[in-house]
Amino acid sequence: MSEYVIETEALCKRYDRKLALDHLDLRVPRGNVHAIVGANGAGKSTLFRILLGFLAPSSGHARILGCRSDALTPALRGRIGFVNEEHSLPRWMRVDAVTRMQRKQYAHWNQAAFEEVIGHYHVLPEQKVGQLSRGERAGLNLALALAQSPELLVLDEPTLGLDVVAKRAFLEALLYSSAAEACTAIYCSHQMEEVERVADNLIVMEHGRLMHMSAPEDFCARVRLWIADMPFKGPPPSEVPGLLEHKRIEGLHHYLVLDQDDDFGSFLESHGVRSMQSMPVSLDRAVNGFLGKNHASPAAA
Ligand SMILES: Nc1ncnc2c1ncn2[C@@H]1O[C@H](COP(=O)(O)OP(=O)(O)OP(=O)(O)O)[C@@H](O)[C@H]1O
Image 1: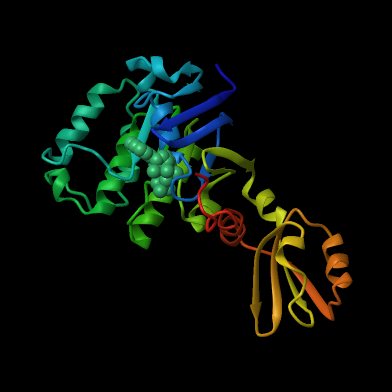
Image 2: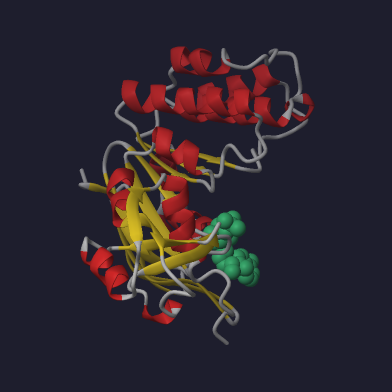
């Protein structure tokens, strides 16, 4: 059994002039919940599509559960549960018929897991998939995916558009499954409060490249906010080490910085700071500051 559920090596995907994945080297270890975060267009869905064999890479290699993604057998696919934002179940089928169909398909069907998850939602067996609300459809999708007893669960923005209650139910079900079963989950989302709640490992992607991978709290520890009372405009932004974001609020300079230790205080002192304090930030602030740094700059031609 491979130590990694996902492995990519110099993985590239080009759509005409756009490089969606740029020599991506990623290794996701077995176990736990892993969250991939990145700005719109960072390449997260492209990566999932390649890993699941729906899309061919332009170059490089991708492996899932130790097998090449372009050669997945039905048996191997049966070990992977996939939930995406479209919740693409046949809309004309009744919930009980879809469930029966899936139960027949998977040898390790876990009815208790199905019932535990679907129990969070008010879904009736006689309803057609197309009649369910978005949240209920997401719940059904997750319940079906978890009941397969997958070794790996791949979730592409599964909670998009769900209300707070449906989202909470979804995340509880996800945590239940990753704790109760020997299941690795990989999950992509823009919602940091969710990531903070469920993820053991944070993967940050930018422009098709891997920028960071660690426990979420270790990423948070890389980013700090310094608030400084400084006369005039302060140093030019290009001279501020590790600068992610600078704002002036009520006359105080707010510097969000990456990978700076107490020397940053000495730097501010050298620019005539009168008083200063430094503080940790939330994961949301850290990730959005990190990703926001390059967001506004014009794309390279
Ligand atoms: N079929 C396609 N043809 C051309 N370009 C595409 C195609 N699919 C994706 N892209 C481009 O590839 C890049 C990566 O897209 P992808 O959907 O993988 O990003 P993402 O990280 O999932 O984004 P989001 O968070 O917005 O869902 C984007 O710049 C997108 O415009």
